[in-house]
Image 1: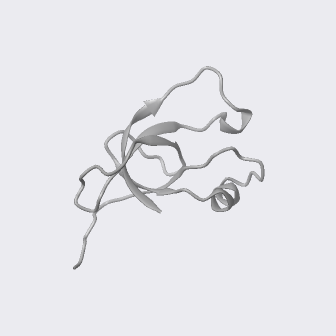
Image 2: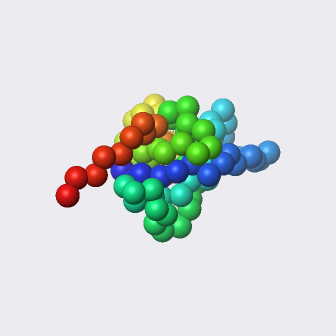
Image 3: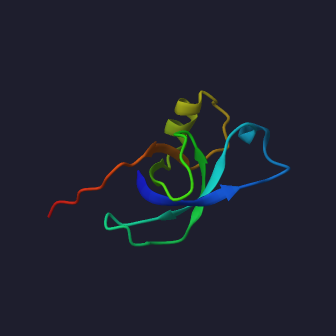
Length: 90
């Protein structure tokens, strides 16, 4: 699982049939303190997230295919939760 911030939506007029009806967002991985880490990437929304939200992303194909109920899904990154708060302990 990856903690990330939603940067904005991605619009495409032509896409893989497995992505029809799914929202795609650009996301930025973050540390628990909210600072950016690594490169941004695309993720499909499965949690009704929106721009500015902190989210949890699943990056594991079999789990994603199981959640979407599609054994041939091309999705590699799936937003599975919107985070209300992050508390880091030492």
